Length: 238
Image (cartoon, rainbow, N blue to C red):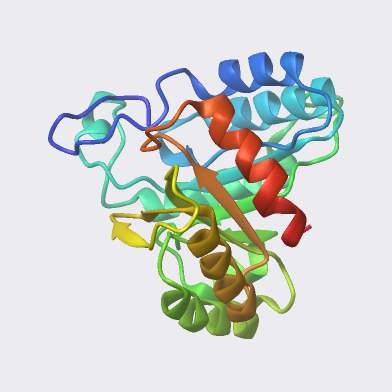
């Protein structure tokens, strides 16, 4: 989200998206790099294509390009774009990124570098039908929810997309007490690691392929939290 809107109450990403990805690529070797998500109607699509190709080439094909149509109306007038037509703008940008609009290029023109196209994942439905998302996207970034929420969404996704990846997130606060029960908050939960493992098992049973941990609301030191997740939780789900 390029603009901080106090009425929305969430700054999203502070740093410019592709600048930050370049920084992360230079400081890591094996981690996947992802966006959740680039608001395509607010970005020139040919520049998005070039920026994504640049990150993909410089990182060694580690980019997962999460995209969206945007949900903050206050941003659109600033960029000279129409909020009500963002669905059509999103579809056009996807065509550009996937190479389906290359007939607009003149003979000999090309977007460089000629990198592998990163997988495209839609955050939510991006003003499209589920059928369109299932056909055109390589995966779905579903909004956070309970295991019961995911059961319904996964069923829809399998119907329109087959075995393409279903991905979601948990805004996690990992508590010190490993036995602390789940306390739910918007988009996530607070719990100890044992209840978190039960939650992840339920999501796995629901058909969720991948879960990302968002640690903005985490109150413990980040290094300590990551060490506990890596040592005690992730080995059960790798």
